[in-house]
Length: 116
Image 1 (cartoon, rainbow, N blue to C red):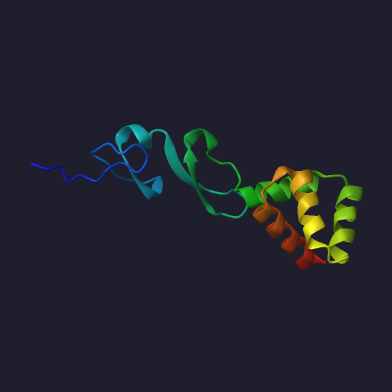
Image 2: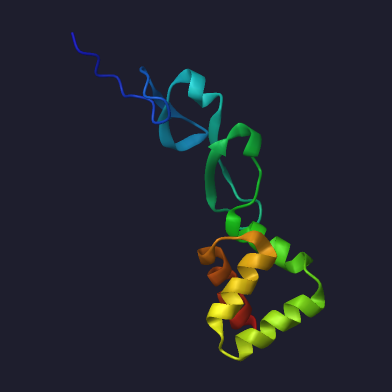
């Protein structure tokens, strides 16, 4: 007889099921103790990961938090580059200063442009 139970999305074992705190995954009992979903505390985006990361911010909100912690003169210099329409240089600077991916830097710069 073939077991038709759903397989765990993380480890592949059976049986697996949907859990209340795992909105997007089918997990076995062992993996349900490790993995979960939670909302970003700043923007409410649904995040997925290990329980130890519960309550952390999404990458976009974390990038913004790091940006706001930079010295004001550094922020002003990036704003100057944005005003000069030098998007490539601005993205490169933000990636270096904040330590984020290109897509996150572009989202942050779009937010900064919309505020100015």
